[in-house]
Image (cartoon, rainbow, N blue to C red; front, side, top):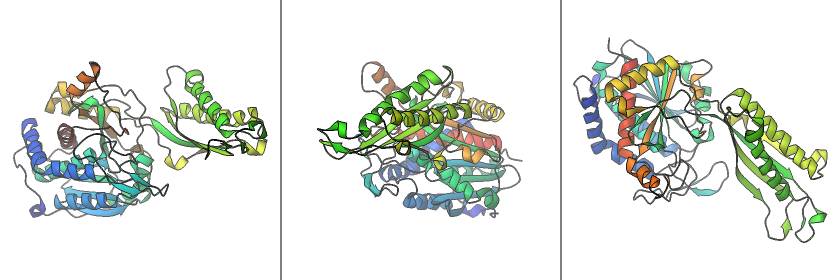
Amino acid sequence: MFRPVAAAAVIVLFSLPVNADELGDAVKKDYDEYLWPLFDHFHRNPELSLIEHDTAARMAEELRGAGFDIAESIGGTGVVAMMENGDGPLVMMRADMDGLPVEEKSGLENASRKTQIDPITGNEVFTMHACGHDVHITSLVGTARQMAARRDDWSGTLMLLVQPAEERGLGARMMREDDIWQRFGKPDYALAFHVNSLDVAGKININESPFAGADTVDIVIHGVGAHGAHPYAGKDPVVIGSQIVLALQTLVARELPPRWPGVVTVGSFHAGTKHNIISDRAHLQLTVRNTSPETREILLNGIKRIAENMGRVAGLPEDKLPEVTVAEREAVPPTVNTPELTERITAAWKESVGDETVISNPTKGMGAEDFPFFTIDPTIPSVYWQIGGTPQEAFDAAAAGGPPVPSHHSPLFRISPEPAVRAGVESTVVALMELMPAE
């Protein structure tokens, strides 16, 4: 277990007891002087899942400078930062750090132009923080600095996790497999947040089930190649694949009960090399979203049934039917907040920042998270919330016929960093102070 950090190592920002106004002023000052340049660095230099080496090293440096004991290379590139501060609960706060293989077209002055070799495909690709993880890690540093400066106001042990590979659904599982609970202690509570471009900047959005479960599915179709002028001589995998894509849309529309949400999206369809060649192979890549084990089973079984039987419709032999593979390693369950803990922290936020700042907007989409791998088996009480990242003016302009607000994973994705980072820090510090009151 880590030793307590000497008081001399702590960066003192403010020494007065915490209240909403003081905390807001302290975080604004720290943002202006310290966190904005850090965010700018992270935004310009995103790194892909599994190869976040420079980001991890910078995070370790920042958290060490704030007075935390640091362990690196946890579950790959993960970082664990610990601060012991007397008796009390062990509380974990997690931030994910990976970017995406997307070319940024946001128009921002600090837009990323970084490229990397994708460790999965071997291709050189542009990288972008198109999901806001730069907000998450910058806010984690801001939280570390505030908590270190306010050690007289809380008691317990604070565990900060810098997680790799969230975008591939691997990082939380990898850190758990590296025995972090055995090495650093099992948390009494687990926290995390995600910046959301579809909420108003600075708002704290909390609801019962913020994220869905997700599966990655591949369908490989083995056709029979032929000349494009002689289609009768082959079995066209493009046609078979197209029939599969259309038939998959009936799963949610006709096989799930109407009040059971689900998503089946074909995100990639690859086949062929030339205009006049019928390929002998097609590859479909799917993301499948659920809110329960029952929904998951219906969707995955349906995908397999549709793919194989479309092969039979096309006359493929039994040993050449489309192959359906579910990447169990990348599957994640739904994120569900602990009700009693959610009520407790929500009340603390409302008392601190006001009712008007804390909202409970139901999630419209079915985004997924691997955070549950930190909170199940064993079960750890947890709260996952969202922070708004888009100014109200942008929503007003969209409503008046202007450009729509870009979603996550879009090359146009953009977050207003100051209100997002500040709200991330303030909401986290309030939650931590609620869970770790001074003795």
